Length: 369
Image 1 (cartoon, rainbow, N blue to C red):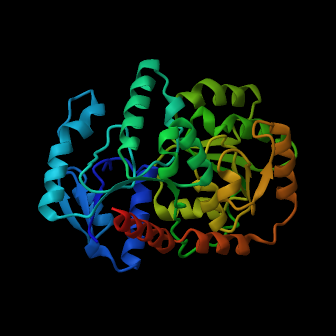
Image 2 (image 1 turned 180 degrees about the horizontal axis):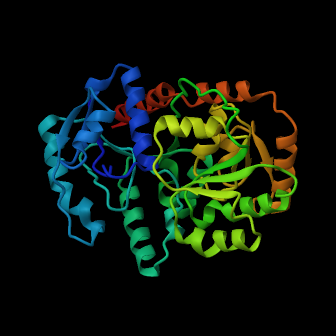
């Protein structure tokens, strides 16, 4: 079995979640000893960084044809070139760890791609861009032999958006790299509550900030927010912070952190809170739990499913009073199950397990085609 894995979407200047997803999957493939079965389709711009992150794999460099400000046509413009590569090297499967509306595709061999969630079908700020995104996303998803997604919640959401592919959607959960050399808690750190996520309205940071404001006179903690500044912060969150006069206790951490710095940031937190209302998987609450710190999230979208009901939850997701009550309870009461929770996630979401699930799917598809 030979697989052409499309990584042309990786931006060498920005490490996105789908980029880390691909690297973790490739690490799982290496742990299965199947590097020779997978060839990476890359660009001249991202070839080097992919080699650094995923050594041991053969690469094919493709110079993508595109039309400037119209990325939607990239797949159409490059289809013949992809088909020629597939025929030349006799690949069995074309695989994309990230199906994008402007992605590459083929119809001459089985095509398998990962659609991480259906959020993009409703999140565009420009109506014309939303129409274009929806049209081209549906088009490329319908061309897949199998569409993989990362939770049963996401599976149902995608099927609702595109009923015609309902029977071709399979679930393979995300993987999470095990935490190595866990940093010891540093008693010199002032106490803080941590949130790591993007600053978009659906991540619902305002509910956490409101809950923190309710508790401001009851706890000594600060609130650390690890994210890039976006309009949601300037227009919604920060004005509330000023109104409540808590700007000296809420810190937005914008700069890029190293892996060691992120490990220290997680490990030394008193509590991690994720109030997000829309998650196809919910990576950060699980990652935080691997550092053996208490975690709170709500039960919206995929969160309760993927966290396996092991964390602390509040409902409804926009109720700051409900969130403040459980925050106070956890900050004033020890949680004794942290090691067990971390071990459960480490086993369930191992990179080798994820790679094995994909390999089994590839073999099943080949037997049917």
